[in-house]
Image (tube, rainbow, N blue to C red; front, side, top):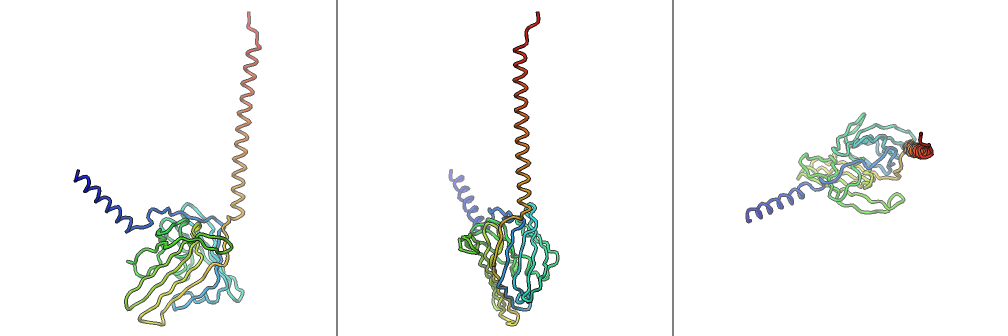
Amino acid sequence: MLGKLKKFVVALIYASLVILVAPGEAAEYNPGVQVGYWVEYKNLVSGGPYNPQDFNMTDWMKMEVTSVVGKRVTVHTSRMLKNGTFQDGYDYVFDAQTRETDRSADPSSLWNNYFIIAGNLTENSDTHLTLRLNPGAFPMLVNETETRDLLGTNRAVNLVNYSESLESYYNYQFYAMYDQATGMLLELNISTISQTTPSSNEMLSFSAADINTKPRSSDYALVYTGVAIAAFIVVAVALLIRRRKKRAKKTVREAANKKPTE
């Protein structure tokens, strides 16, 4: 009896350690977006030798979902400069499960990681974000889920607040706010403060000014077409069944009215 109790206690402790070491691993990592979803960002500010300096010349930047296949989401970016010049951006493919990202023509490694995470994550879920300076750093978790009056509606958002530092070298701060349902980025603030070379300090920030969470009209057309086809099949089957019933009744009547041969 004591042996069984000991095994149970050990198993309970092990399970507790697994929960503490790997929070959020039970989360479902699925895309929360559909083709046609987009976010437009404004208030773009960038500083430091490695961040994209042309952010400061950008009026708005847009992220649009152009494809969703299984867990893989293709995002296209574009922007309008303050001088009125439109710049078509690039595509990258994001995997909701693994966070693997494929880029077509990315001018900066900073662009590819933070636009989108999996949809419907909850507090303590691992975002699988990889903007870490130290490879051994802790995972970036959803620190808090709350509801805010944002972009014209009450919206549930996931907050990610992450920091790391290496004494005498740097302090790194990362703050992001994501739409919980879709996983699309709504606000971003990143800063790296160097303890050794002040001229290398980095900062990057922008926030959502508009958002669309309705599929493209073509997607609606596909849905309507599918519904119409399904309705046609149901009606056709119903008519076929009705016709067979009529034939069966007719056969029964004919058999009943038929005189027996002498």
